[in-house]
Length: 397
Ligand SMILES: Cc1cc2nc3c(=O)[nH]c(=O)nc-3n(C[C@H](O)[C@H](O)[C@H](O)COP(=O)(O)OP(=O)(O)OC[C@H]3O[C@@H](n4cnc5c(N)ncnc54)[C@H](O)[C@@H]3O)c2cc1C
View (spheres, rainbow, N blue to C red):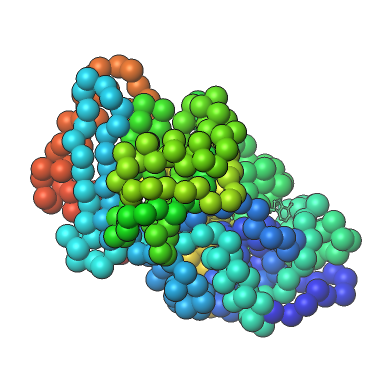
């Protein structure tokens, strides 16, 4: 990666935002041969989230030369176990999904986001096609032939295409004139890491409570990352507990399956919402990652979709460059929107319904959920289909 340039420069693509989706998009685009600017202020990764990288995500990171740098700090996910812990009259059966049943060693790998980010940053810094602007963008102005971008440190640049990877409060989305609908959920997610006295055996366990799932996802060693979704008041109460009290509470919530638990330093609280932008691309600007979709952390889909955004975009841009097309032209943007719409909309809908069915006090809803999970558990081909679709949409393979 070359260092900060002098004044106005021209690029094929400018990626704005250096979270995991933006860095992956910049690496994929730079590797595909596009002259790429990455406008992202360097800062330590601010929270302790982990990502269960599913389906094609690990393969993508392998292809991009990222995975070899962090694979040894990830844990394979061989079994996913769902436990109905709603204590309601009508409950779903416990369901275990085993990767081996669909011919895989693992569904994916769980990794701490700060570890993944360090590997992405290291790879990005090697690419000669990638120029880093270590600053936030403060102006994004689409024109007929290019988009003008200014940074807070006074640089200006032009690009035929801008990639909005700037998260939930996306400046790029606003500049493109794309409205977003936001549905706040009556839930927050508390994240932290625990050590435990019994091995997790690469099994990820989700306890579905009446307020949301509490998930234990394996990390290397006798450690799990915990995502505990609860009503906002309850999540705040848990957040405020001291280490001993939170350790006891989480051990009880886990029904002691991992033995004695000890909470590690660092906790974060995330208010949950579902966000759907009106469009994935407009006016030479495309959206990736949370600028394009926000989901609650159910089924570990958010960043996996963000990585598929990056992968699809790089393929479309590479074809346009090879054909000598204008990569910001409406036809290229339409191709990207078509590629992403089905995946993002279907997953958002399924997760929304799964979450509503968990929170619902209505007996018919609880019955439908219990029957649905019972059928998935009992019918082998249906179970295998659910596992494959959970990893990535089948129409991509
Ligand atoms: C509790 C929890 C657990 C999760 N677990 C999983 C999981 O297991 N699997 C999974 O796939 N997903 C998971 N997700 C979702 C996943 O964390 C997100 O999808 C992902 O982090 C979003 O990455 P991003 O790069 O799109 O956005 P962000 O990480 O928000 O990055 C956006 C970046 O843009 C920068 N930025 C903003 N404005 C500007 C600007 N004007 N100029 C330059 N830069 C700018 C910001 O500083 C930031 O660095 C989880 C989410 C939560 C809340």
